Image 1 (spheres, rainbow, N blue to C red):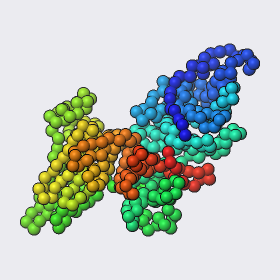
Image 2: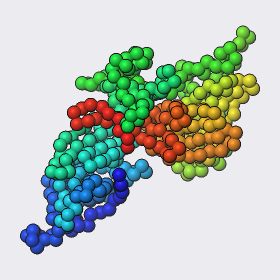
Image 3: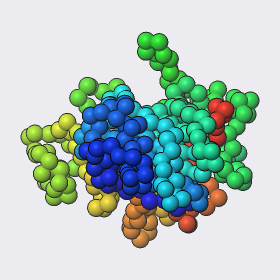
Image 4: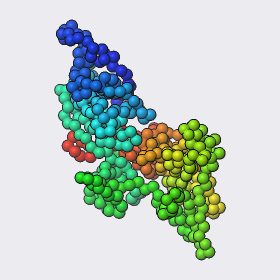
Length: 446
C-alpha cells in the first residue's frame, strides 16, 4: 500500500466559498468537487473556515481515499504527525473519483467533540479506514472504523470502539502471552504462524491465565471499569540466599517510594539508596531543561529505580523520574551488584532526558523503552539498545508507551498502549486489536 500524509490549505475550497453561483456547465471541474466538500462542512459548522487535506492515498484505479479537516483555527500538527481538532472542528472522509471529473463521494463527516482530539490514520485499504483519536495528553480516545464499498461507492458500516492497551507479557510454556484490555474486556493473545501473526485465545483457553491476575476495578456514575494495570513496582528478592529486597515502601509523603534496596542478614538490615544526580550534573547534562526554568532552589531532583530485572547477582534497572511541576532528574540505567554492594549507572546522551518504562536484559544487550513522565501521562520517546561489552547505544524511533518486553524466536516483542510491536531484522511490525463489521475482535497489521 502506498501512502503520503500531508497538509495544505485548500485554496480552491476557500475561493469557492466567495464565488457567485454558476451553472454546472460553466463551472470548472475542480469547483464541482469543492462544492460537495463545502456543503458537508458548512451545514455542520459554518465557522470552520480552515480546510486541510490530512490524508490522501490511491486505493483503486478509480478512487483516492481522502480525509479532509475543517477547523475554526489554524490546524495544529503534533510531534507525532497527528492533527489536533477543537471540539467543534470537523473531519470528513471521501472517495475522490479519478476519471477526469474528480468528484468527491462522502463516506462520513464527524465532529471532534469532547475536549477535542488528535487524529491519526492508523490503517487503510480499499474497503476500510481506521482513524485513531487521542486527547491533548496523548492518551487514546475511541477509535473509528469505516467500512465502505468503492464500487458503488457508499459507506457500509461505522464502528466506534475503545482501543485495547497491551499491559503485560506472561510466559507460559516458553510462549509469551499478551494481556490486552479496553477497561471492560480482557483478551489474551499469543504469537502464531497465521497471516495475522497472533491468535486471540478463546474464553476457555484464557481462563486459567486470567484467573491468576489481579484486576483493578473502579466505578464512576453509570459506568464500571475492570483492567489489568502494568506492573510498575514489583517486589523482588534476589542475591545470595535472597537476602536483598526491592520493595515499594510506605514512606513519608515527601519521600521517594522506590529508591532503595535492603539487605537483611542475621546481624543487621542495611539500606542502599540509589544515587541522586546533583544540580551541577543536571545543569551540564540537561541544558534545555535549565532554559525551561529548572534551577537549584526552585525545584527538586527525585530519581527512582524504575523497571528492573534480576540477572545473576545483579539487579538491572532503568531510572524513573517525574519531569514536571518543578520535579525532575537525569535519565540513566545500570545495575546494583550484590557482591560489591554498589550501584553502577550509565547516562549516555540518548537517555538523559527520559525515564525508562520497560527494560529487558538479553545476552549482551539491554533494551529500554523511554518516555517523558509528565502530569497524568507518559509521552513516548523511543527504544534504546545498549551493548554491554562495547558500551555502545543504538536508538530506534517509536511512538507508543511500552509496558513490557520479551524476546521470542530471535525477535523483540513489545507490549504497548497501542497494541503489540515486534522488532525484527527488517524493522518494526505493528499490530492492533480492532473490530470487524459484525463486532468481533481481530488482529491487524498496521
